[in-house]
Length: 272
Image (cartoon, rainbow, N blue to C red; front, top):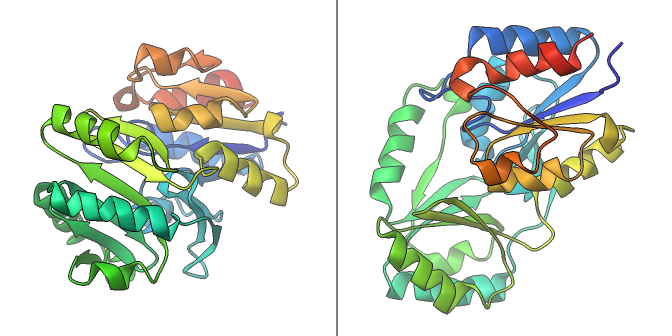
């Protein structure tokens, strides 16, 4: 039997190849792990609606940790089990500045993804979503009544600008003083969640509910938002495509996400 009881998987740049697929070798290795009694769960920055098609593809029986650990979502019940949304007062202040300075923004809502601007990003989501079956559809909501939205939880806010310098200036002048946890997903995109929310902390919450020690968890990742998992689990594995500063936080480094890095790592370090 493996000493590990759970495998936590980041999605983009980790589980998914560059064309947003799960390779056959990865599917087979994860199925082998589950056959040995190891739980597999997705831990992602994605909204649950853009994550659950892959959860469905792998036929997982675990919840999803989404929006950089802002909440735990149960696909079987189609509901958010627990989480911590962004505080309304600073969010309201921030969104006033977002509108004034014409930043793009995606809102992770309980019933879908809202957006201001960032049409190119939304168009990609819409095209991908068009191929999903009806029960896995993704709801996209353009902002019409921003104040009305704030009556409901906003779990994560993604800010975009095609000019990285403008976004960095906006962050320094507006956002840095606000009580949000920030993760740079790319030079042109930054993700904000409530303080205390992280992939690692929400994974620890789930593991405790399952009676699993974090030393018995394996985590795979490739980006800044995965470091919080790496710092808490028994085996942290960075993908070969991860930047060197991310790899330095891991116990091991595997192959690129386009070269079956997860499958190779499971066979080498996890599976009996």
